[in-house]
Length: 80
Ligand code: FES
Image 1: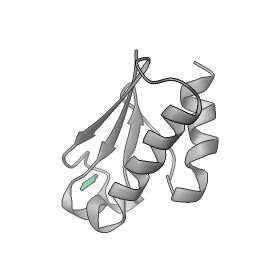
Image 2: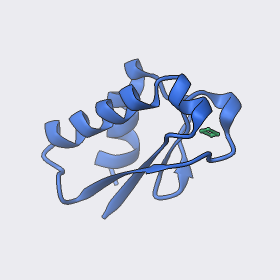
Image 3: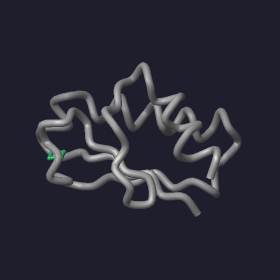
Image 4: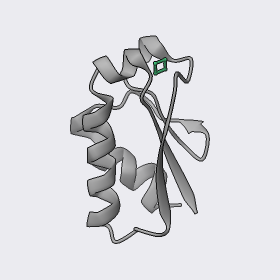
């Protein structure tokens, strides 16, 4: 099981964490990985200045935007 964690703390929420979470959920479905990838939320991951904080199995991802979710998903989730 791969765990994708999206920070929904106040700073990340204001930066659009809900949209990032939706984009990861869509990627999970698009790649047919429901049941193999778990999407969860977390409160402040102590990376408030880096944009919306996201981690895969605890490994922080580089800056996440709505536009690069698919690329990051392929790199950090699909290829695992
Ligand atoms: S609120 Fe998301 S890292 Fe702090």
